[in-house]
Length: 328
Ligand SMILES: [Zn+2]
Image (cartoon, rainbow, N blue to C red; front, side):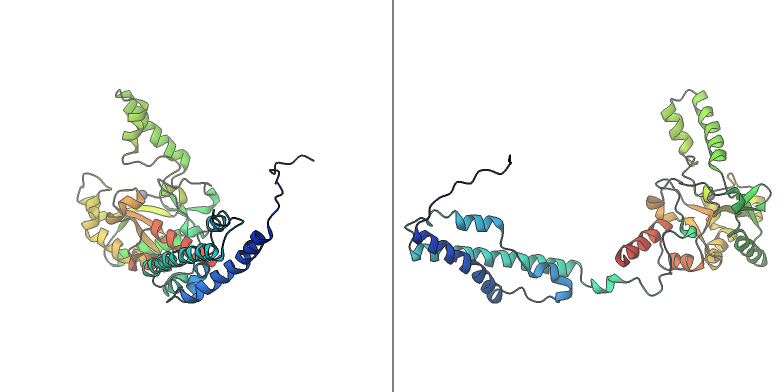
């Protein structure tokens, strides 16, 4: 039968060499065991350090022991003792380095046990929850929302029917506080977004831009089709009538955040399960500029938690994923 195994040559061993080898085979594990007693790895709870308690005798060292030139047929007891002393010292060094590694681990992750469960106020949610659907520049929409799932919240403006009634409550509460909200844009299908995107893209190309330049310009201030949160039906752009009456250069402007209406949204949206989805200090994560008008429904518990801990949706979902991975 063919084999890839190298052919091993049989070699006769002298009785003396056999004795030394037998001695090593018995003594090396013993030496290893006693070294663990004399140079123990100290100061760590076994629960957090199980994987470090046992330092295996490296293959290199075993090979080194067996290949010792002194371990010849005429090796004396003195030679053998010298070899064993060397291996014991190597084991000691190895233990020392493992101990240092553990000290480093213990100082960089001081309370591993405490990190295994979420904070007490962490909402009971799953990354699969519909209200945590993540669509954005780094997260393309996978499935378009069923048209039957949508309901009007303003002329030509639709929203997920699970969220629309809550938005109406928010709008009512704002009105009671003297803020008359006006819907600018809610649900957008990928098809709608494509049409608007292409229209601007073609306009830029007509001005003499290359495809690449035109796309780049179009993408400033407009999300590429498939990457807009408006596809989810869980988002709505709102401003208020006082802002519109003030005649702003742009209806959707960062300045809206400084108005009475903008501040009202910031202060009260979470009571209804909405968040200001693109905060000023999270643009690096969301990849979207500050939008004080863009509300996103996430649910009351999640909105309160995100606000209390100053997290944007991407960060919150990262946390949910972390706890889910610990739980699995
Ligand atoms: Zn928006």
